[in-house]
Image 1 (tube, rainbow, N blue to C red):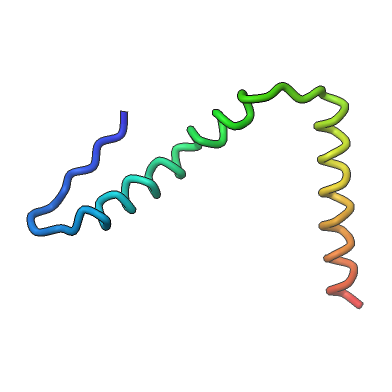
Image 2 (cartoon, rainbow, N blue to C red):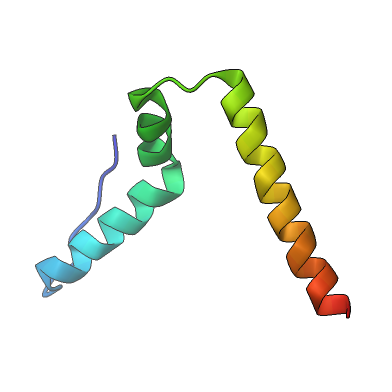
Length: 64
């Protein structure tokens, strides 16, 4: 469980922003999104290959 200590005189929006940043760093949201819907291993592999091809294309374009 995340706890954020609100400092004396601190704006509530700023404390909320700190909480959201801390929550994102834990990876909880990402884990929830991946569990939300099952994807077949073949589709995950295909997505990884497409991402690798895209990144490689960017790197090749940089070198030219």
